[in-house]
Amino acid sequence: MAEAKLAERPVAAAGAEVLTVNDLQAWYGESHILHGINFNVRAGEVVTLLGRNGAGKTTTLKSIMGVIGKRSGSIRFDNKEIIRATSDRIARLGIAFCPEERGIFSSLDVRENLLLPPVVRPGGLPLDQIFTLFPNLKERLTSQGTKLSGGEQQMLAIARILRTGARFLMLDEPTEGLAPVIIQQIGHTIARLKSQGFTILLVEQNFRFASTVADRYYIVEHGKVIDGFANSELSANMDKLHTYLGV
Amino acid sequence: MQALYAQLLVGLINGSFYALLSLGLAVIFGMLNIINFAHGALYMMGAFVAYFLLNLGGINYWWALIIAPVVVGIFGMILERTMLQWLTGLDHLYGLLLTFGIALIVQGVFQNYFGSSGLPYSIPDQLKGGVNLGFMFLPVYRGWVVIFSLVVCLATWFLIEKTQLGAYLRAATENPTLVRAFGINVPRMITLTYGLGVGLAALAGVLSAPINQVRPLMGADLIIVVFAVVVIGGMGSIMGSIITGFALGVIEGLTKYFYPEASNTVVFVLMVVVLLVKPTGLTGRAA
Image: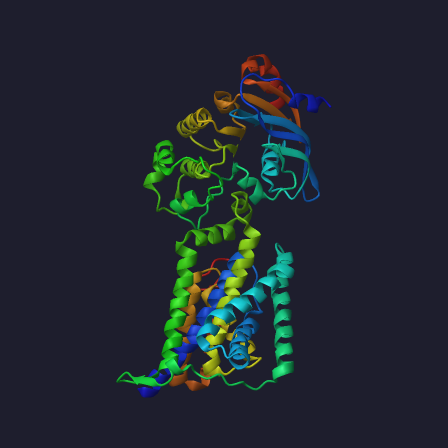
């Protein structure tokens, strides 16, 4: 019950709820990974899931995307229940996913990688805006996708989902393994996307990075959301946070 | 020299069939991870559909080139939906055994009704006769088979390597889960891909009908060589399977001229050598 209340915490700013996750449970084969996840995301927000390795953050994103075979509970997106929907249908409702491993295709060149995700609705960023955000990509369009540097691959993985018209982005550890200057660039990108009205659900280990972009945080532990607070309450929650994350 | 050119032509013709069939196998393997042993039976069905169209419906060769691949392709897609799709994620062996069983059933049914002897299928009027090239006499139909097969192979290569649809296919070969999470109906794409590969086999069957007659076991004889071709070329590569198909046809033809005793075994000797030296095939990726 404590978790259920968390999801309803009043939070400043932002619009209507676009994503509501209730008692989400998920399994990888026989192993039970999520034990009842509750949280919500409002339109235009950047919400970050924090937690230790293996807490269930990535599985939460994958469950929302519909790529985890066995899941139960409720996930409502734009007032539609999607807990049983297939991932291609979920994508077409306007959710786009940038996986932790980036998922750049080696048999496709950069241009093909960029143009791969189909446009699911109008309102995606035009290519010239994408190249303004990520000028490196424009120069490497004919390179094999996996020949890019790690940072460039991350940019490509983000860039390709901006074209599709999806307004709800899920980014799984976009800063992992990247140099500080590139992390900064990704931070600017997220801020820019937020100002353009994108809603972003972020999974991060890098708490310092998250604090520069997030409106709200949820703490995930052992497959449950155990706490949540707004960015404005951050300093008051610092001690708790250190305990949760073990940093 | 006349005899050499004649054998080279026979080699190119066989190479055309090898290329069309191994190309289909490569496309299917890439997307479904299934070694499609039913390929020879589906090739045979293509020839039979052409035969039925002509003898029961009076529909000519040119229509058969379109209709037979579509009909057999639909049959293949039904196989995929009802049976093959359940093997996703299992070892290659299961798909191989299942499709081998399907091949035996299909061939058995046709043998039951049509025996083992060949049914005649005549060359269409427009492609009868031949031209004297100066150094050899070229039957028009044989020239047509080589050129048409080459065009179809290259068109398939273009479709897969150079178009947006092909990009979906290649991406889904690498990571079907992610491609589906981008909003593409991957299961439907897999079914269509199987239909495409099977359609290529049926097309080869129609092309072969006027040359080799229409026989229930025509595919069973051919598919053994085609699998050797696939092993030599490597399973994963589209262009590799086309080139290897034509090249091995030619090598067979040359062997028939220079050392006829070995002409039926040269492909298998090469297969053994390739397996020992480079088990993934000349152009292939690890399976």
